[in-house]
Amino acid sequence: MESVCPCKHLAFIMDGNGRWAESKNHKRFFGHVKGAKKAQWVVDICSQLNLPCLSLFALSTENFLSRPKTEISALQRLLKKVFLKHSDFLMKRQIKLSFLGDLSVFSSSLQNLCQDLSEKTKDNSGLNLIVALNYGGRQEILQAFQKLAKEIRGDSLSLQSLNEKSITPFFSSSQFPEPDLIVRTGGEARLSNFYLWSASYSELYFTKTLWPDFGREDLNSTFESFRRARRKYGKI
Ligand code: IPE
Ligand code: IPE
Ligand code: MG
Image 1 (cartoon, rainbow, N blue to C red):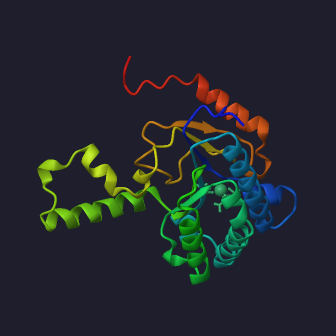
Image 2 (tube, rainbow, N blue to C red):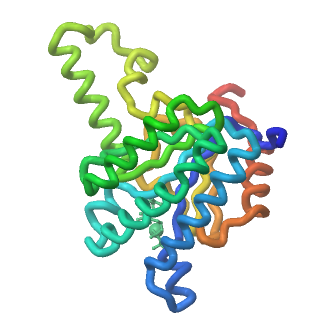
């Protein structure tokens, strides 16, 4: 299928699973199950549309710290199930899977699975899929500071050489192109600590649609809005 994606890096803040489930008198977890299915659908479509890069914000550092342990454990089990189920699909579609965030907080079986899948898919030539898990933009900035400070202290980097270009590689998200378009479902108009450094010139699209309800029409509307955007980068 020819590319109809107007951008190179599309990112989703997949919000609204809990409210979706509660509105149907289900437990919140059912919303996460539906949300995971929706994520699979988006990956499938984006890989068919020849999108180069897709990010999915699946769990923030704040979610990990502040949500009930039962919800976090259930989410971990769900992630494991979904990754295991789609291992062959990733290879068939030539999807390269990468992770952002601190995975060390997860069970060793989930960590190993993430590592195995990244390794197994690393030479794939299709969609670059980035799953942000226990990820926080501030955490990413802090880690970049720590790495920078270490290099400056060790004399391998001088204070004078610091500029936007030279410090960018210290950010873990800099291995990917900056997101062109960040879409947030669920009605909130905020980033909730997603991609703080690399989103400085991203187009933002907020929709009231809850993530499990996000469909082809919503996707077309996000693309349409991106096509209309005039990306001026400070120019007149
Ligand atoms: C987003 O949905 C998914 C995660 C943060 C894991 P929520 O769980 O935040 O759903 P709402 O916002 O409560 O509806
Ligand atoms: C943002 O959703 C994080 C993810 C979708 C992974 P939240 O539901 O955690 O955001 P807040 O708490 O409403 O800002
Ligand atoms: Mg939410």
